[in-house]
Length: 112
Length: 113
Image 1 (tube, rainbow over the protein chains, first blue to last red):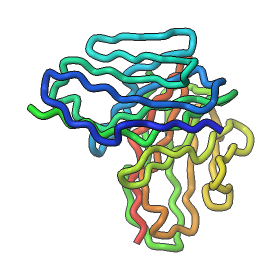
Image 2 (cartoon, one colour):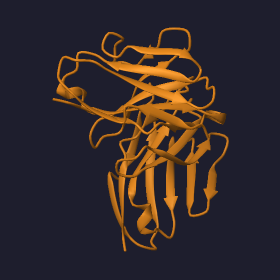
Image 3 (spheres, rainbow over the protein chains, first blue to last red):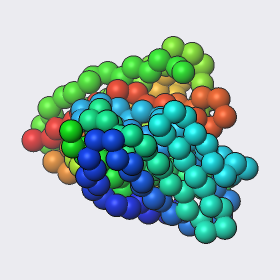
Image 4 (cartoon, helix red, strand yellow):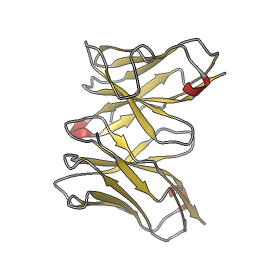
């Protein structure tokens, strides 16, 4: 089945800096790659996603890039703010699946 | 996106007992899933809840331990049976919306003593 690896496990940045989180996946048939933000004690919230027919997608300060050849995708957050502090999870759907396989998570801390 | 609710939001249970978690969606959805999130960990898929048929379980999860019902397109239950402290986790249902997007319920925080 699909295997998703995520790095780094923790990331600390200064407010206003950029943050980048990277994921690799194993199943070349995966075609859907969402990113979730989970604040303490809350449910994961979908923040952005990308499909395999697109190389990059942007939504305000958040962008995701996908490299199908290398089987990796990345989340980019620019002009970070303290409210961006949370755990971020990447995921991929795998061959013929609707369910998601999640990465291990990245705890982002934005220092004011 | 769909509005998803779960009951109970949290519970403390004694080992050896069972707990049934309910997931309700405000619109009909084809795909519903149950995930487990152990403390400080990522999300792990338990099973896909299939309407009108048996759930599809992931490796490491069995029907006797985690029986699932899905009587219609807006409701599902997950039972955690014969609980042990290792079952202490957050249990989340999710639904698939348009174009593969998945949304999560608020979760049920289970503590087993």
